[in-house]
Length: 161
Image (cartoon, rainbow, N blue to C red):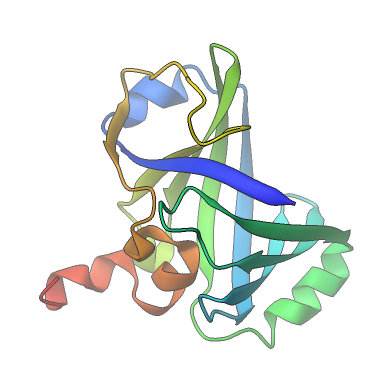
């Protein structure tokens, strides 16, 4: 399956939270974080998932994604053997026009980072832009969760980026 999404930083935490219809805790790790094929294990609420993603296209908007639901116990076991660097976040779902925005508020070593994404059916699909949406970071690998698991947001100030 081809995944097409745009990613953004969030400029106002209060702005999106007041319109959220659902919030879910997510804990995830990576069995493989190579850009050509990331293999992610995720606990999303009471459900587990195993996801494989391919490398992004030139624009950074589109890439292959395969996902299978697994039991929470299986996901918990797999998280124990993941590469170092677990991602912890709350995901908020906000309906804006005809689209669902998912906003991730990160914790732990990535605390302070808040990102939104919207999935599209084509790269040129029009979507309504909410007022709390900030800078677009689509295709910027520093904002991929697999990158954040190795180089957390809190440590960025220590690097010359």
